[in-house]
Each structure stands twice: as C-alpha cells, then as structure tokens.
Length: 328
Image (tube, rainbow, N blue to C red):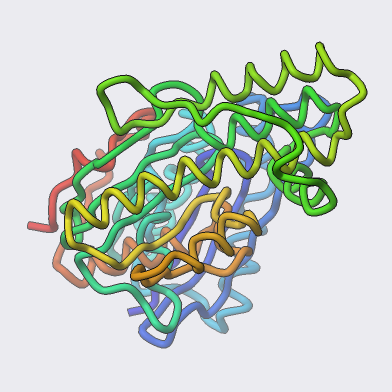
C-alpha cells in the first residue's frame, strides 16, 4: 500500500509517499517568513501552506514515480487550527477525487512512530520521548494506539525554552539549531543553572530554567554566549534523560525512541546513545522536524489495521496522544 502523507500543522508544508519498501519520497518546504517575528505567526503559516501545498504534493508524487497513491493520510491535529485545515481539506479532496481511502493522523503519533521508518526499528513496547517546540512528553508505547503518558512539561516545552533562550542571546529564530551550534564552542559547566523539578511529580518544568538564563544574562552581561548556550543545553538534556532512566527502571522497558524537533539536537542524541542498558532509536535529523513521511507511516499502519475515516473528520488544535485508541 502506497500512502500519501500530508503535514501542515505548523510552519512546514510537507508531503511524502511511504510504502512497504520504505520512504519513496519526502518533500518539505520550510516557511522562512516567521524568522522576522521570532516565532510562528499562525495566519502567515496558513497562507504559506495554501500557496505551496499543491506543488509540494505534486513533487512528492513525481519523486515517488506514481500518479496517485493507494490511500491518503493527513495531520488532523494537534496544531495551529488554520494550518491543519489547509492540509486536511486538500487530503480529503484528493482521496475523494481519486476514490481511495482517507485517514486523519494525530501529529504526535506521527512523531512517536517515526523511528519505525528506520532499520533497526523499535518494537512495542518502547518508551517514546517526543520533544519539540510545542510538546515535551514521555510515553510508554504499548501497541499501535495504546500510549500511556508517563511525564510531560507543566509549562514551556523544551523547544520553546530553546527559542526563548536564543532570543535572550540575540541569536534569532528558530533557536534550537542556533543554540546547538553555539553550545559546541562553550563550556557546559561554566554557568550554574538549575535543574528544575516539579514538587511531588516526575513532570518537567522549563520556564524556570529559561528565566534563570535571562536573569543570569542581565546580571552578568560579560558571560560568553557560547558558555550560556552550552550550560543551558546541558541542563535540558540532563533533566530529560534523568526522567527516561527512572521510567526505564519503573517499567522495565529499555527501548527508547526519540522524536520531535529537539531530537535533532547533537548533545541529546549523543547523551541518549551513551546511556547504559537502554537501546536508543533515532530518526535522521531531517525527519525529526515535521514531515510528511511520519504522517504517511502512521496512517499506513492504521490503514493496514483496517481503520478508515470519513469526510466528517475535523481539524483539532488539541488532541492528546494518550486519548487515542488502537484501530478497531
């Protein structure tokens, strides 16, 4: 089954074709209009999707060498509601016109299952750490559609903290790659920064760390930016992986899948792979950020399990992953 996947939940306009042979095409247009605003502007994102999506989809089909797929999958949430609507509407229209099945995919499920596109692929059950600008959550993935939330951020997502720290340092947007590159020239032990904990909980909190960076920068303007970046990044990586270690001990599950935009971070990838007793599965950096391949893959798994969605499925701004159910 060759599945066309469409992803438009935020600021990437993406389409991909995935089959039993793997990823046949993967086309991503990254919107650059948001850099001037140091963050994603929802209205501009929706307009850019509407302008670019048709050509991105056609490019994905051409690169896959097909005129039409056997099914269409599209992100139906969570995400910016206007942006999601652009991709979802086109996907439903294409499926109807081609006379092929359609399925709406949870964006987070796409991320969580994206390491399964690689070889070797994680087998259920596994721990899944989804870390991005909008989400930071650790799941126990028991089977397709059966996901238990183990820990989550109570305030800022880790990727959001990266963006705001980059803003403090005057680096620009998006902050994740900029902080990562700068940190490689710095001393991660140079600046004392907190490892925030939520009292009585195993959840994360990153707003305090972000605030500590801003206060330190104001009080000690002579600190080297590369040292601040390296110290901030070390704090984020340590608290993320400490919770993974606890979860592995509590559950007895020692397979870890990393996903989401922050999974492209060089220190997080290296530190995760260095953990003893835990087998780590990573998507390539190009598929850590939003892409159509992860949507096509997650949709394909559900389609093969017999799930189909009608044209009435709508876009959702909020759709918790742990609320999903296995295909009926």
